[in-house]
Length: 219
Length: 219
DNA sequence: CGGAGCCTTGAACGGTTTCAAAAGTAGTGG
DNA sequence: CCACTACTTTTGAAACCGTTCAAGGCTCCG
Image (cartoon, rainbow over all chains, first blue to last red):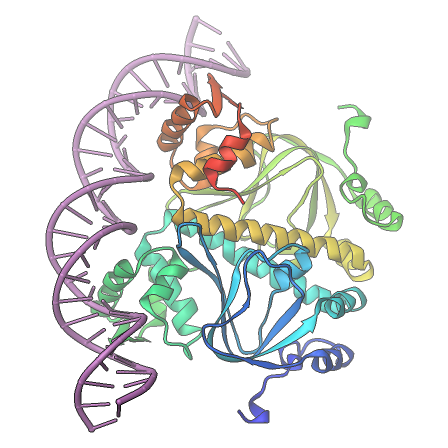
């Protein structure tokens, strides 16, 4: 990977003062992670904050009876592990590396120090959590009063449209919207008939994002 | 209502420095709200932060097809409206007064100023959002891989056990866990048979909280 | 004591899951 | 480069959980 392709934390927080950017860049020690590995597991205590320089990470939780639920996705330029860190509690989900990735890490103390000393950093973190909470609660409402097909449409927009670098499996889509692979497959077939998407083998291409959004009743 | 019974913001944020407590107490202008009224509606832009001095407020969202979903409950000593305020976006749900209440209000600018100047205040806000996000995502996972009866048990603990001052209707319980009143009623009958709860008319008393928690697979 | 709102119950319907088996796809090593 | 293997996708049919609808009874409060 060329140096130029590496995303510095500074580029993720461009609104921050230079002082913070320098600190972040300096503190971050990028490491490579193989697809399928984990940055952390549910129940562990957070030791710091992760930055995705390159690649893709999924935050998911496996229930006692083995069912997985995908909460959030983190691509290039996003940080993760922040919820448990600022909540000062164990992780409630595991961070699985979905594609070979370059991940930076900043020690908890340094993050706390930054949050304490730099109110702009704190403000952005607050904003981030607020938006994630909004999304989670909207999904929660949707999980019970939307049809599965509407949720699949939503998942296609969030996963396939927003993170096209990953070839999402029917199972991952199912895990994101709380259903099963057979149901996703049947729904995708419908969407293909209606011209919303095209499927070639395992590949899913979105032909009409707008139609999907309307179908999903996205606000 | 006697003055002594009124909860000052200071009592909600006892961990904050005196300086902040004074500011909050001074800025807050408590008003009474009647049961059934609203503090704000979904889609509106936040103008400040609300503090519950006394009473009960529910945060819920009504979908296009008229189904309501209860997200969070705010009793005495809690603030609400913080998510949209720090997220700098419109409310994603409405705040309905569930019992006659005394509610304080602090202007947005004052809150922003406090967040900016007092990192401890910011830290507590971050922590609050982090915990709310955790809860929302765990409920999201539960909404698809838990039986309805398990979610009803969860709702009983969160609503009836934690906020006993309100006589929760079967409909409100249903709205919280994403089901319907008939299903809640049938489930409550089961729980009564098993000795988890007792029902007298519309009243629900929890006899064995531990058993409910186990049943709900609460972590 | 009257009426609005809440609770209860039954029966039918329907969307999803489940299970299983077969076909397809990609990646691996000979 | 092909064959092998593991995983993913696909499909069908049956079972099930929960919803829906509707009617009747109960409670509480004015």
